[in-house]
Image: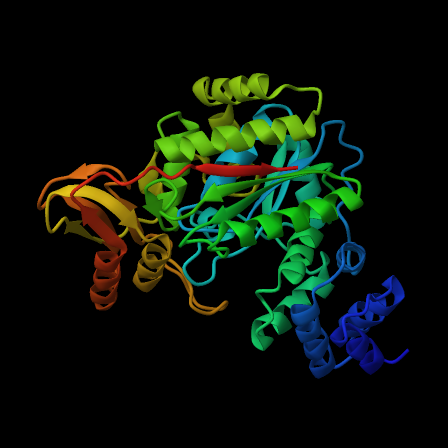
Amino acid sequence: MRIIDIIRKKRDGAELSREELAMVVEGYTRGDVPDYQVAAFLMAVCFQSLTDSELADLTELYVQSGTCVDLSDLPAAKIDKHSTGGVGDKTSLVLAPLVAAAGYAVPMISGRGLGHTGGTLDKLESIPGFNTKLTIDQFKETVRTTGCAMIGQTEELVPADRKIYALRDATGTVESIPLISASIMSKKLAEGVDALLLDVKIGSGAFMKKQTDARRLAHSMVMIGRRMGKRVMALLTDMDQPLGNAIGNALEVMEAVETLKGKGPADLTELCLELAARMITLADPERGIEGAREQARTLLADGSALNKFRQVIQAQGGDPEIVEAYDRLPTASEVYAMKSPRAGYVARIDAEVMGTAAMLLGAGRELIDSAIDPAVGIVVERKVGEQVQFDEPLCTLYYNDNARLKDAIEAVEEAFRISNAAPETRPLIYEIIQ
């Protein structure tokens, strides 16, 4: 069969065989199939979707396009977490050492931020010397010796997805839930994990704004994982306001460390404890959820999780002293406090607008190759539901470039809404899908 016949078949809504999908994926990875034909195939998928069988096959073909991490020699269960991204989401920096401190192996391959969302790699690289570009062998050795490692996608891992993702970004096919699912799950399954927890965000700062769409994505990814023999669970969590208080790379590292010390913001701490407990029960199905929650709380309280983070930083070439001396992290030279125009309650903080404001200061990137400033960002001083008096600070902007400040202030002013009455409380966790 020719590639054009496969495109027509999917365009007309028919189910493709594994062999037909392999012709597209393997041919494009080798360079035998041109961009314009794969672009047509991706658009056909956008309009016609994929069956469960097609989606599982596509994901497995992505995984098989490159090297898979083999951690089978490690006796501990291997578990990771993936978040669909948001504003102020630094949970990976807390969860990896926390779950590793519980005795499980956490091989974590993360991404960079783009647009209003932050990336785990950008946060880690704000730690002086921290190396997120380990080889596969170095990655495996770090997991073996410390219990966890946090790196970016290497050239050997899932090259088919990396090439197809770049084409999706240029052809208006990023939003397809099957294509999103295959992209996320292929990278995670190539890590060599036994189990995976998915944190699917909902709200203004999330990729999925509606709960119905987030639920579809979560079900899709859970289905793929199960078909490939993994234990998978998804939580639908709130991203309508920033998670925690800090937005920006070094600022978020500080907040993650404070959380590991048991002194983090209430919402971030609550979510991290619940995600950690779910990761523990996925890694060890015999564990009860209450016992797992108690273990997670204990590991924060007794310093075990913080010590594990210090070990990981040192193992990956970073400065472990940042956990006690925050001035060893990049620091902005200027500070601006944005104050409330009136007394009342914080009724809304638009997470997407806040993320955009941080990007305007230099904390994020508009293009994948844009440079970022690890020192700058925003700290939210009042969260949704909290009272504020006239002229009290709503947030603090940390910046280095005066030319960037005006647009960021205008964005932040748009993000906050003050009302006379306290708003209805939104749940932090909406659903659990397994």
